[in-house]
Length: 284
Image (cartoon, rainbow, N blue to C red; front, side, top):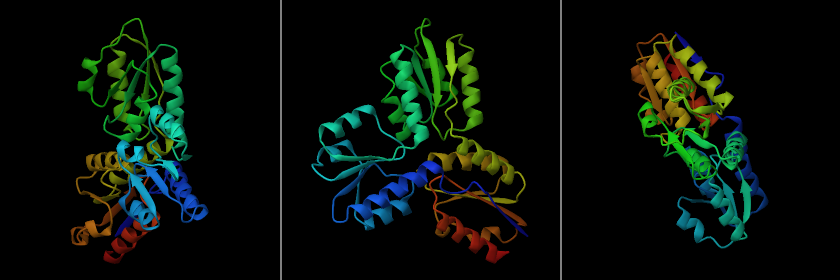
């Protein structure tokens, strides 16, 4: 029997950086009020630990409006430009934990919008990262998640079109959607802003899933990149399980398999991965 664990599983650079920023603020500003605007990352276990240490998660703009003092940490997914403007007007201490790769997209769409170009963001319209990017893109912008969204695009044919992607979007699906948009004969520039770590993680996950009898994908239920990993793995391995922690895994289901693969989303702490890994090894 064999267990294969993805080398790319666990915290990515942007998530690690954001989490470290929160704990640094807790160490430096003991006794002071510390907030994150939205969950700093998509992992309930990490958020619970931060809350137990005194961090308050502001989940709505109304809650942010009520803050009059303290430090506000901007989540790794980033926020709209107007939120930065609001924080500046409130004269609060701000720590920006936006992933640098997301920040780069903000800069791109701001520049392209300023040149009068139409922005197409390929991603999930309900995801905070995509909502943040949209907030830097000006009025001429649209979000595309599926092929069905493309016919509804209303773009002046004389405008140049700039296409960007949510950093955690499925790379193959991104390529498919770009190809469909290209058939519309727009003057387009395509900027593949999917994070390299995301592409590598997805490629490795598929490779492992194709070679094992069962696949375990670990990550928060709200994690976009983990959901994409699950879709990719489930396509390659029919016995694929999506869990947040070891408690969600029925180890008896793995009793008759010979090979098991494990991968995890970019917001999954190493201790959770190791716990699952160690308990699966016991079966073997």
